[in-house]
Image 1 (cartoon, rainbow, N blue to C red):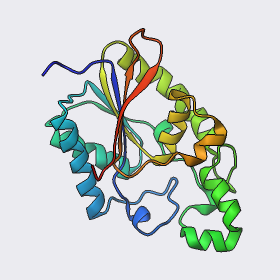
Image 2: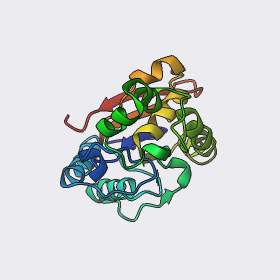
Image 3: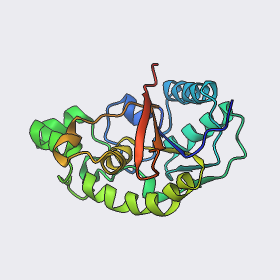
Length: 212
């Protein structure tokens, strides 16, 4: 199979212990569950079947993302690949919501308020980050460290978090802030982008759910 070039592969981490318990994680650092490990390995197997070999990889500084990328690269027999772990790719800071069960949070703050903090573009949970603030720290890192490697012909893997990916998709796909509430990314979901034929912008090539 010909080498895959000028490609960006985004993956959300596998299920974490906080995901399993329906807790807000943010900058908390829970481990993967057994299901999360299985999801990460399955993502690696799927990418291997599709013929992917990566030139560089990026992840956050949180263990659920780092464990996921290690499992993916193991399935690809690329355990020696250079992986950059940067806080710019961390999950959004949920502030006062971190560690709360979602049902408990709704009882304490109200259903609509919690929905707005979780899903909207600019609502900020107490002591935390909005999606807009997450994008403000993530996008400059993406433009500086990741996009140039894809532009120059690389095949780049990024494993990070749900809200980190949502903020990135807003820029890559020009999602209107009013529509971002409807964007959801499953654990270990794979999203593949390539540059368009005129080398102007990224276009989505595929999205592969962890259950696929």
